Amino acid sequence: MEIKTFITPFLKSNMYIFIEDGHILIIDPYATEELLQKIRKWGGSVDYLLLTHEHYDHISGVNAFKKEFECQVLCSKACAERIIDSRLNYSRHFEAYCIIQNGLKKGEAPKVEPYSCTADDTFSDYQSFDWQGHTIELIETPGHTRGSICILLDKTILLSGDTLLPEVKTETKNYKNGSKDFEETSKPFLKALQPDTLVYPGHGEKFLIKNYQF
Image (cartoon, rainbow, N blue to C red; front, side):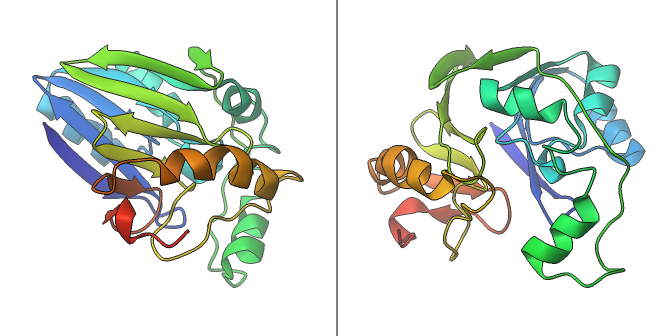
């Protein structure tokens, strides 16, 4: 299996593309015409778009990919309820969000139009499915947002979104019970993973979970 990483201009978020036997799985899609053209040239089938959470910098390519490849969008039910609302997915006030949450100066933060998209399939708590000989597990990990999930591939690779980022503590101020949800629900799951689980985060470089300081 081949794993490709693309860094988006929106807060340097990571989009991951998994390729296996002509089939493609995309995590947190971002789209430009150049990127879509590149994927067309690869050929094969874009099967799924998986969303780690509802923030605009992790969903901005959903509509373009669905239009181009007719792929299915999977996310948590809580995420699906928020990606349809430009206020809740932060696109309506994305510039202000970048300034407040990430310390960017006015003029440095990207300006975007209010954006919304929809999911084709949702779940609560847990869902798993087989994809090209691999087991994909979707686990709700609230804390960063209500709709946050982690994606576990073959028990060895974790796509963490913004639930785990390298060398920083999880940001849990986006909703009232974020810290409580993370401590009671998400942290126990994460700490129980195998030490050599390789984490592909929503921002930054991949790391082994045994090296993360909870």
